Image (cartoon, rainbow, N blue to C red; front, top):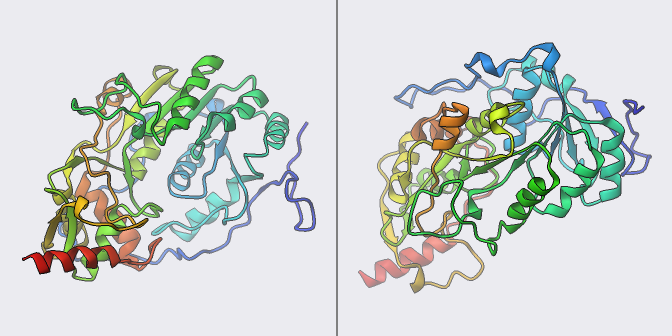
Length: 384
């Protein structure tokens, strides 16, 4: 039988490290936030349905592959609040817990005292199999898996697994003139997300009880992808916002906290067994509309939008805009009709939540880089 243990720094890096974490403060100090410049109401993030709370008899031993960034930090908190025993499998290169923006000291200490950590590299397949089989988890959430070969050792190690819940991507769909993308639509085997497609196929072939979630663009506090942050940097600097083509391209964003709630809602849900669900925001938005929504969320003036033809420029390896220059959005009707899932955040309210709990506090993942903007604006001004 496996035992809980702590591994000292002198021990081998791939030795099992499986212990409750001591609480410690992080960069997110729980400072009170002020929203006086936001003129609309925003829902508080908290599960509102009684179905989100489970009895002691249905408490699960849950493993999250990943869990220290973005989706995982919100998902793990929901699962711990519901009474589940949650273990994060990570390489240990980043702090296993961090205090979230606006999270009280007491809530953070409580969470940190309950979360468990299994240190290892998921590419070390033998270690994955031995460590997981020794602990016999009921449910696995795979948040950071990209290839099917990474999932096989997990399934081998846990023959009695009750459910495997996978974070896929709406990027697997084949580009089409018929939108929005639905779960039954054709997929692109050459997509850069083909590994996620192959993982879904593996799960189906192995006969396990699985559920796959396909988000579109994800936004919210702690986002490590420059989605809303890209706009906030330009709005704060008072700069024009360069947008490719007409700016009427339609896209879709879903808030990370709503995504975390969706991941919880499929847990132990018979209706989610061997099913795929698109999860994202209720409304679609144009690129121009997104720029204006970011401005409204952060309390900035109406932005100046500059449209340009991407074919007129050579940006090298730099990315001039954070979204695909195309229509890209998916239907979420299946999650609503089958699961009864409803988002808590609308787009502007969600962007305000992200701004006030992250960028507006002076925290962001990447420094502002306006070099491609300057190329676009320089050529645009000369041509005018």
